[in-house]
Image (cartoon, rainbow, N blue to C red; front, top):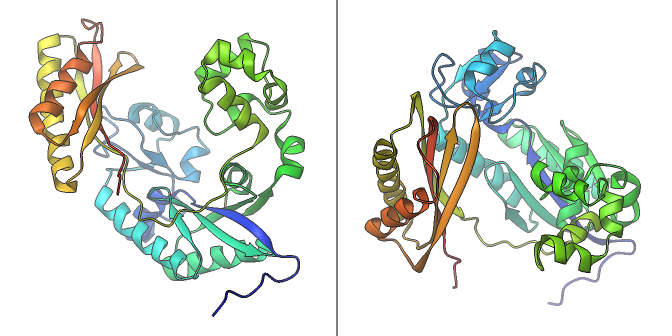
Length: 352
């Protein structure tokens, strides 16, 4: 039977579903007595030891606690917070329940990670659909989400930032520049602080200024790929296809925070080798190939650098992953005190 013709007034929409304070919400669901209290999740959950904040709920964020912050700093800013260790298997299990609830709506769902997904739909009332999504997720899982509505993925994702917490917001081509034009370039998803600083040095401080910039000048300054891409971001352009293939992690990583700074390169190399072995074990369990291996080093007091090397041909061999990690570590100027190191393996694209 042929598909029914679209109803009058219907048009395609992308809805970005983002679970609010998801990891903290999973922990609070397991410990209802924590409801209403500031909760910080990260490291081994002990703020007297070194570690960083993985996530914090809104109650903790009100005190200035944010992701990536040292746990000790978080404890000083919010001494009444409850600190908990990361429990990734619990978050993955909760995420699967949420994504199943979204798929139960009978719409295409593209999972982006543990706590977010795109939903595609043709409707004449995307706000009503967003409300239905929010109600379904909360009723079936107990979790609260925000929904951004857009005519492509970028605008939908950006809209979610205005929807939080627990709201709905629409951002389209017609409203994009009115909403985003006067905002700093760093407000764009995909442009970080360092890039924003470089753009500002070229006289491009707002989204509107970047959108009006000459793509050839951007290519000359930032490269033939990244330069024009920044302009595309500023225009709010992007893909509008929701892909329903099962989500698969793009990488696996392991890291460790030293309780005392380490400056001995040989000792750091030994730790990196151990982390690489653990990453290789994770990779083996997934039966996938690694195309790039990176090493992250956080120097004291809190300056982070990353270096990576390609793996050709892509491999799942533990020895090859370890060798690539050693090569990446060799790209650093060591000898300074180090507080954290990590190893990351990026998977080769799935070809079929």
